[in-house]
View 1: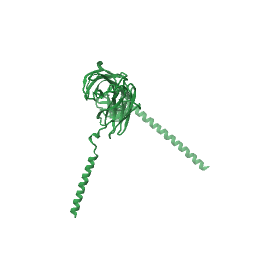
View 2: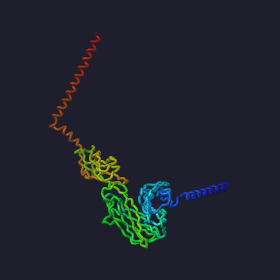
View 3: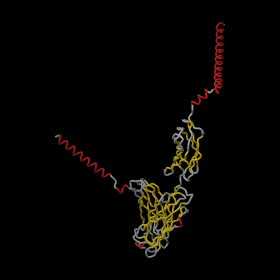
View 4: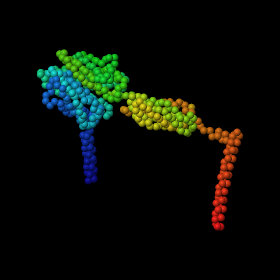
Amino acid sequence: MKQRYGSLRCLTGILLIFLMGVMTILTIPHAEAASPHVVVGDYTFSSEGELRAGEDFNITVTLTNPSAYPVKDLRVIAGGDGTLMLSSITTGVFGDVASGASVTAIYGLTTPADAPGGIYYLGLSFRYSDYNGIEYVETEQIPVRIKGDQAIDNRTHPTVLLEKYETNEDIYAGNEFDLKLGIKNPTALTVKNLRIDLQSMDGSFIPKEGKGSIFIDTLAGGETKELSFRMQAVTGLQMKTYEETLSIGYEDERGNGYSMTAAAYLPVKLVAKAELLNFSCISNNLVMGADAEYIGTVCNTGDADIYRATLKIGGTNLKNREVFLGNIPAGTSKNADIITTAISTESSRMNSITLTYEDVDGNVYTTKKELGYVSVFVTDYDSLLTLKNDPNTSDTWRAVLITVLVMLALTGIIVWFILHNRKKKRISADYT
């Protein structure tokens, strides 16, 4: 009976382990679900009736993150297909989008008055990253039906899109950088004689050596061409995102001309830089074990604010100390006062003051100022005793001692006189 009960308990344990394993497998998310995702949730047009050729209209697009993971730094590039053209964009930068959340973009669209009726496409390219810094690029096309005087065959209507863009490094005002573009032909048709032109609406970015245009002979259906422009950010830009306009002209295989526009949104950063000025010790002679106070100025000489500034002092002759200064706005300075202790008389130049600070992205910077050799003296008590016993100074010590004794004697006489006088008055009062 005991053996049967033991076997039953063993089988029950194995069954529970099996069920737990199955539940674990079922609850593990699929590989593709581990990545964030952006889709077009819905879109509506400003005109309730037909969209006619030659008329301006708006399309409101809802972008949704249906995944279980947040989307970081979402940017959207929109472009027409040559006939359908963008006339305005509300924004292309949406920031972070939480799981299940949505954002809304509004695009102004137009077509030529003589555009044939049919279906045209608004191309959208989504660029974002997850919280591990991994970047993703996705594309979608929204069909737009236009009513015109004549119909078109959409199988013969080519489309070109700006699929992606990136820079080889962070962009700082006044610095050069490489802008890399991905131009895609999402249709099955070959396009030819492509001309890609870059233009900054406010002159924020300048192509180097005047090369603001690139030509491509052909772009096959489904092909993506990688391009690179050497650019320079002009001096004096603010820390914000700037828009770079991309215009593409191209032809189909029969020589019909098309054009499209898109935008790249480029964030500009400012240089964080600080200097240590006029740091010195307020005492000319430092005594071993005594405080050593250093004062000076921390100047923010960069274009950006600096954050969490901390000043550290130390070395062979000085004890390590630090003081927190906080944030320092661009173009301003802050006085610093740091107190340490003299700890050694060694003749070394290993003493310094170090400033540590961060930029807006949390990158850490340091600047260091060498203090050189710091003279530290030791108090000589033997010399004080010798001075006391020196015959040349004995008269001085004798005079001091006599003065002290005379003062004590006078004080004693005055106290005795006062007490004796009080006693006589008390005896006289008793007899009367």
